[in-house]
Length: 338
Image 1: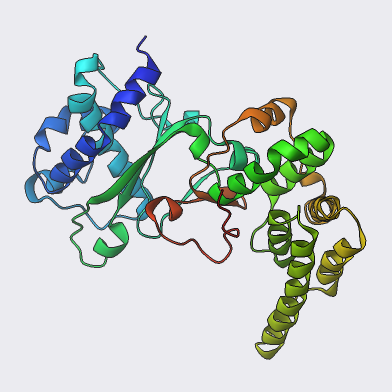
Image 2: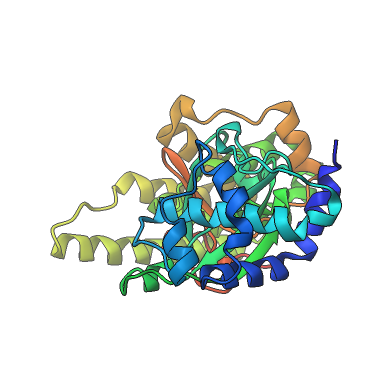
């Protein structure tokens, strides 16, 4: 069996070469070289329906975003087999996302967001948000959003990144956890676990939860906590006045009360974390389980080196904007830098 770690290392070191070759293929050059691979992985031993136009004209049909992702994945496999991994003795690579990873022979995922920088991924555990994925991923940023407006589609890969499995986690939340992990574990491990759970499950578009993140950021300094509580009161009034003018739902008074109660308890960091724990229990109830022993061990010793934005509902929403130097949406967490 091939050493998957070694093979992934070859992919990582040659990613720019692979992208260059993919862009050449997407312009119609060298497509024939991939024909056997595409026929094998396309299903039923037949070439994909988009192959002929790509081979003869260097264009694709105006496909939907999900199908474009499959096209990019198949071409990437073709380049890996025929070029990047050819000298490593790889004969055939399988595509099998049903197993939880796109390329199981490498234990490697392939993501192809466009300039909206987002993809949807299966939700397994909220703690993935802090600890990362089980697999490394290659991120291939396409110009699909712009090019789909002027068919026929002449797709290109405009940027790429290789992420280790632990980097497939929320950058800002990891930075926040890393800032407080060491001292908080030394002081009280149970309290540290409460913080870990809140960061894993936090809904960053919820007003109270977002202010709790700001308070957690500065919770070792009581003056900063008091200052931000005061700012939250101003923000509460401003947002509710705007909501009333536009006939939209207002933020409940209970949310502001929960923030204001923090200033009545000392030390400040205990009050903030208890308020965060109360948010989890009130909003998510039994849906927010504590970390398992395995997850807690990984949190204690892991790098917490997330590089993307992550939010969830029924699925994860990966936001690669930060990875490519673009600001996230307004529901991304406050920026935390070490």
